Amino acid sequence: MGNCRFLDAWIHVVHRDQKNTPRTRIASGAKALLALGFGLFLAGIPFIGAELYFRHLEINYTALKPEVETWDPFPFVYGSEYGYDLCTETVVKHTKTSYGKPLYSVLFSTDACGYRITPVDNREDRTHFLAFFGCSFTFGQTVNDDETLEAQVARRAPAYMPYNYALPGYGPQQMLLQLMQYDLRGTMPEKEGIGIYTFIDDHINRAIGSMRHVTSWTKRFPCFEEKNGALAYLGSYERAHPYRLLVYRLISHDYILRHYGVNWPVSPSIYDINLTVAIIAESAKRFAEIFPGSPFYVVLYPWSSNTYGGDVIRLLRERQISCLDYRTLFKDTPPEKVRFIDTHPTPEGYARVAQILVSDLNLGAQCPGSW
Image (cartoon, rainbow, N blue to C red):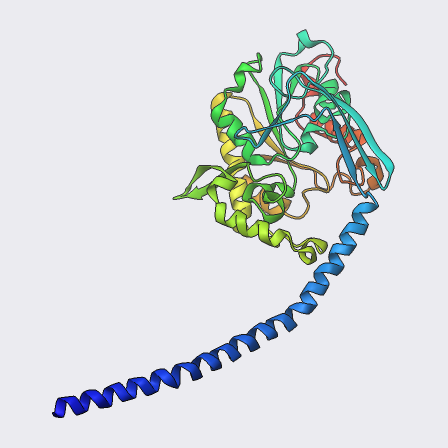
């Protein structure tokens, strides 16, 4: 009998709780969620308004056609480990306008291996090679074949045959991958020569895969990272860091951030600079293994390497890598003479760098009668 009374009392309590307490809790929870949702809506109104405003600004700015770039035919082939390559045996017309006004219109040619051709005189007299690595600054995307840095150096160094292994948009990681996977001796009959890599500040962002870069053109670039004191090749950036790339893609669609040019990281850290330097140093090591006795130099291009160039030179020299510091070469020169408004070099800019490069490396003295 005692057990029955206890059971009746327990059922009564459970029934009362089921009848009253859950409904009260549900009602309170619903009010809290409603209040939270309404608060988030009110807080989001300014953000949505700002997004629409900056979207409007971007649409209007794009309509002004601040920069229009065309390639005829389109020269890039995607799918390789480098991210992209150049079409083989092609002549490409590259044109760019700024606010409807012509900026430059040039032609460039590629050979059977997909490298840019550098026209030279007296090919039979050139017994040494000059292997150039880098990005558009080395490739010369704003000048004709006979106006590139390679061509202008070759005119002043008649004993050297230039080879242009650069491509627009590349970073130091493509240079390293080339030297890791391919024996460049197959493309250069000369036994000895000089390797030259041209550094600009933006190569650090390309090497680390910054937000602005991997959401535009570098997501398939080779990714290197330091692990246990050594460089490790992790494949493409999108394969190595898929979740980071997803976050970057989501953030990069924000019109407010795009308007103010926000990047992540906001500025490279010393770790990022160290990684870039490690990639360059490993490239120099590989080059020396392939071409014993052939020196390798890092050129810091004027104006375009001023921000991080000091740290890069210091760290490279600690690793015994030879550097040519040209950061202040144009300090007394009107900018329009040596670079276009998109910061790429003009023919005169290349001519000035070529002249000092030939002088510093004593290339002109290699052949009697050179300047």
